[in-house]
Length: 437
Image 1 (spheres, helix red, strand yellow):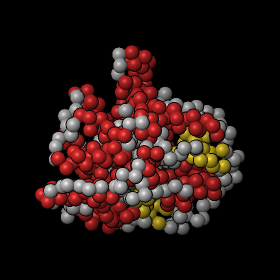
Image 2 (tube, helix red, strand yellow):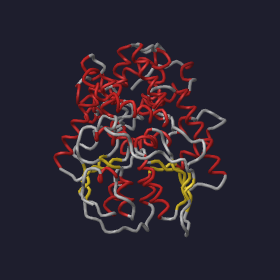
Image 3 (cartoon, one colour):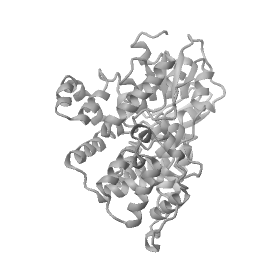
């Protein structure tokens, strides 16, 4: 693709990066075949190729984002399926991230839109506020028909996603989890924000598995949200502040007692954390530290698959439908490891048909674009029902929440199943629904 940025524009590192990405595009259209919004809407402007043209025009002109451009970029899930499909290696992720940042700086959204986005950015990264919001949602759920009748679609979406009962247990205040001897290593685990409040049992399972196999686990003091939510909503200031804070606390651990890895059980967080090096490539004060941190970030499935001495116990075999989170399969290119991990543990693992298509969660997408998100969820659930599994495994809290809101089959994180298979408790989702133990 030809571009026409001026020399002055190309002096901006972000524009220079966008220029290289745009020039790699050859207009082939392969991306349209795997883009969820194009499959649903059939509009070229709601395909990666169409959005690339919109972004190119906006950035070349250096103009404020127009409402029509914002509409189509907002509809993008950032599922990155196009990143996997593209034969030319167009790095759409970095391009759309830059476009979103430009939009947030130059476009004034309608008042209610600004209000909802500000609330999400305030509440979701703060586990205490998020737990309060979950309690409020329980009280408000009976009012959903009223909210639906008056057209408050985003309020209805938030209430629909909230669990029917308050999450069992609380996040851990303990920061260090030493393993029994023989000790084999030391890792940091991202406590997270949404998962920490919504499903603390996921990280609890990860800690038990890691301890059981000789790894000390630390939750670094001062570590909070990874910045992913703000990053994908275009708020660079909040995203970079969150990332800087976490980089600093992890560097303290690396330079202190040392870390073999920085692990996360939320693949959406992992994709952003692995990109810290790129995010701060032009920041001399933190570029090296950001690259060091990114180099140590691993999804929990990556790390578990490197432990060749896992000790399994016999369990009744269960049929597991594996949902490949987009951030894992497209963002991090991790496709087979989670399935191999579950198969080695004795589970019968089946791919979900059309597994490359997003479930509609995509961070805050299922709140900000509820109609499209629900159509994608229903499409995903229909494919799951075709294979009739005992349970569903997904490596991202957003996917777990999105799918569980529309189906009666238990949805769990793969690490919960590995914990169970190596001597831990059964996943709570199975216990509460009377599944075979």
